[in-house]
Image (cartoon, rainbow, N blue to C red; front, side, top):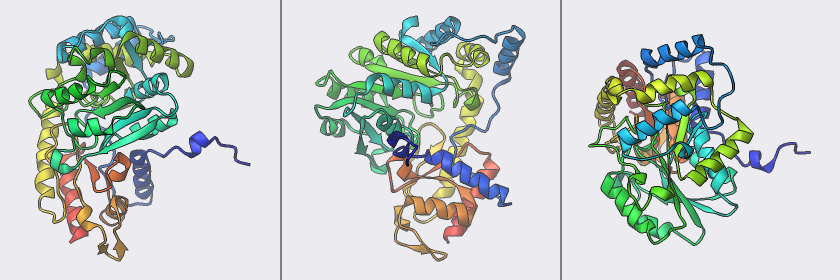
Length: 394
């Protein structure tokens, strides 16, 4: 007798977490694995944020929090949206969650009905597809390529829309490609959506500050898209606070209320100490984290330069986040050290076993020709990792 639900049996395991787990297994066997698979900054959380958390503990913050977050934190998030994005939100439009992943899950559960189609420009963050399917939606993948900087065009969006289209989900800067949509590119997509008023947009902006382009643009900045956009953000990436688990949305009030209702039945409010610390993070000038952004840009340039020396790697120049997403399809059909490479998953596993470097297959992100390499590691590790990759392929 099958004790498990069809829902869980049909759910994929996160490829990034699976690769990280496999890398840990190999390390436990004594293998010297360099992990470039996880999207986790290798910096420590800034001291001024840690001090705020310590103060919150000493001030005896230990009780259940409001489901949608402390009012003081929501006020700080509202000021952040205004300062950084030019977006005007009110308290009922903000919901604080246990990480941006929960924010996304809340939105899906609150908005998707069985059969609703959700457009996902490929490559997309690994969990979008399964979050949509978990809520009985239908992911509609829009293929992009390195030639368009992995960005969906207005023409592609128009072609993907059907009477069943309910939402579009995308990230900018993008995980895994590092691509950044400009204001003009977002406007072109918004123009298409003017003819389809039933479609909502989830704009995942978690990498907003890790941005090497001329600036960050939000879909909700357009007056004709404001009431149809759910802006998702958090502190994991820019503030090196992955384990603190705080994300949030700014959304039309009815959608925010629905997310609040959903969260109230699943987890209730997010961690009290983490929320108090995030108030301090939100109130801080973004210049306080510039040192991390500058280092990521240096690493990006280092990695691109090293990859350019490897035959068969074709990479764009990512304008944000901390990933490169090279096309490695030239290796498909080849045999390396007795192992035939049929796809990106084979290639990624080959690098793990032969080069002892953990990456992630692009298949997990909806692009089977690429692999994702995270450069959230020290320059020394990056140099050694790519040296190993080159040697394993020569």
